[in-house]
Length: 175
Image (cartoon, rainbow, N blue to C red):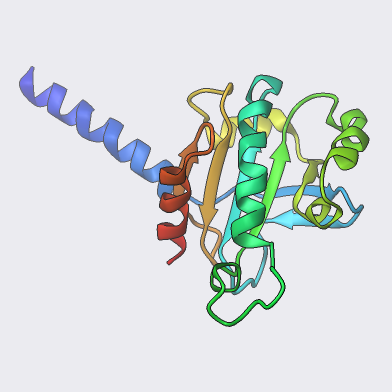
């Protein structure tokens, strides 16, 4: 009996580990600028961060990440030099709200966000049920952030509202 429990515990821990180390599934969509995009990005030399929101209830937590991600990975203040953090963390990143009715809400979203962020928001064309089956989110009511290496492999997963500790975890995975 003790051996069975030990084996089950190992299998559960390995299955969680496998999810973190698995390949990111193919996903197709369009940015808010209207450009077609497929993830993971083929032949990229950069890491990619993908923020997925599986339900509308996770949308508010997802929004807590928009400005910090912009500040770290996009913003280029005047006088930017080689040692600027935004230059150092040269990554691709995308927010993907997998919520019903996003196509209708996209115009509202565009009106409420900076135009240079529109290229980072994807309206997903891939079957959402299929993605949920492949990604296996434990709680669809929180956002998930996947750090994907240059081969399409998931190397880190962070969930929930933005915190500095979670951003540090993402940055460590990129280093």
